[in-house]
Image (cartoon, rainbow, N blue to C red; front, side):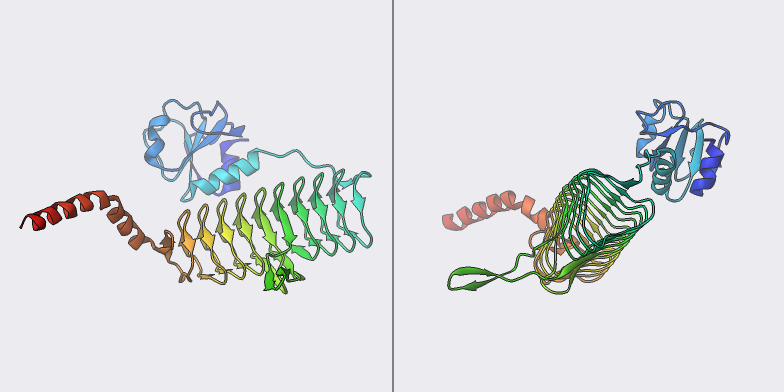
Length: 335
């Protein structure tokens, strides 16, 4: 593909030779002739001289760079589009394997792909071009809309609704029982979990994620949200649109998270907490109280990020303060 063709497809501007041939996408150091690579900021300018890349994706033109460039205000997005365009995944064979198990009253869309050893329960609806990989389990009364991909060994329990263009990676379990018990004289009495799970469009769920069904009603994952590996979403939680949940996050029951919120790795959220739209939570934070819209919180328990930074600064100086205090105490004792 010519660079000028890639520029049209990605909506970017060319500097340099528009006829240069682009055959792949790679990192700056690993790039070979024919590759295009990303230079997202000026921090990596020093690595340009040793790169064999034929073209660079940049935010603004670099005058001393004697190679072709694609210029965009959002170079990372252009990099993602270049990967999408130039790295074509092998097409999946369509059809239903005779080694798959298909229940009763199943509705199958056009060009569907159900691989060997997949299990499809009864009263299931699968939209056009849905892929169900080997070892996947789809329970009764599940609906999966068009162009969604279910990777190997995913378990989707009964009464789960999944939107369009959803990607669910291996080992994930959706619709397992919520953790609901009530104490009685014999110990812990299980509260039946009879609700479901609703997952919107364009959601991507990483490997070994667990999303519990609601006690009643639905656990909800809003359209465009992304959930990283090893995260947990408990019963009746509601995530808004375009949320980012980074690895190993634990979201307790009935938590509400607003559109565009970001929870960094290993964040824990207590039950019934509300996190506002576009709020951000730092890694390993413990959220015990509501976070207002647009605010950034960090720490255990989480507090506004600026306050947390000041507290950390004081904490690092505690040994020095103790020495000074002990010195003052000795002076007072001498008097």
